Structures are given as C-alpha cells and as structure tokens.
Image (cartoon, rainbow, N blue to C red; front, side, top):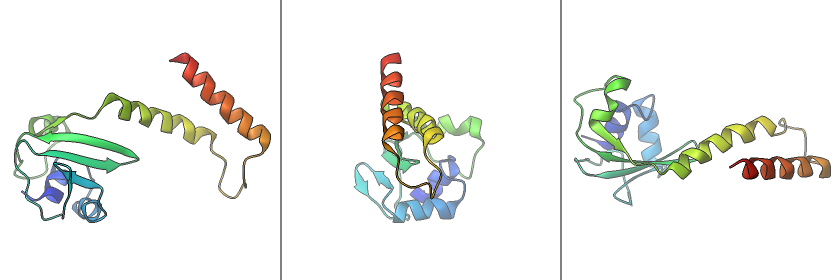
Length: 126
C-alpha cells in the first residue's frame, strides 16, 4: 500500500491529498528516509510524521483495505511517540492563550516579564 493512502486510511490526515502534500514536503519519513507519496510500506516499517509541530512515530502492523473507523486504527499501527512530544503539545496549547494578536507589534518589556514569569510558574508545578 502507498504511504499517502496508508496515512489517510489510519486517519492521520483528513484527506488523501493532504497526506500526499505532507509526503512531498518532507514531513513523512519511513525508517528514517525521506520518501515520495508513492512509496510502498510494509509491516514493521517505522514511520515518522511531522504534524502540528510534533513528530509522531508509529510502526506499521498491517495495511487496511480502505479507510477505517477511528476505533479500529490500533489494529493497523502501533503508536510509539515519546511522551515528551505529547507534553510539548500541551505546552503549545497553553502558549497560544498568551500570544499577542496579529498586528499588535513586538512585546513590551512588561509583556516579556509576564511571559518569563508564566514559564517559571509552569516549570515549578512539574
């Protein structure tokens, strides 16, 4: 099965064209190599997908015949994404709350101090 079709079938991308585009842009690697969307994948291949500033890692267990339901995804892949990457996703969610609106200019000195204080508070809680 083609890698772009596989990623679409196991619901990493909403459409197959988005999956193909990600492969062409170098956001998908198979066994550490950059690949084309037409690359065939086989069981035991290790896939790395860069999506939303996170590197998701998965191992191919089997190839589905067509797009499958969300509950059946784990039959065809094993997610081996490190926990640090997923924690980074949580930090990105919180940081978007503070970002300045577009066009508001550079942060002032007070804004910078507030940002630094916020990061020290989140570090001390962990």
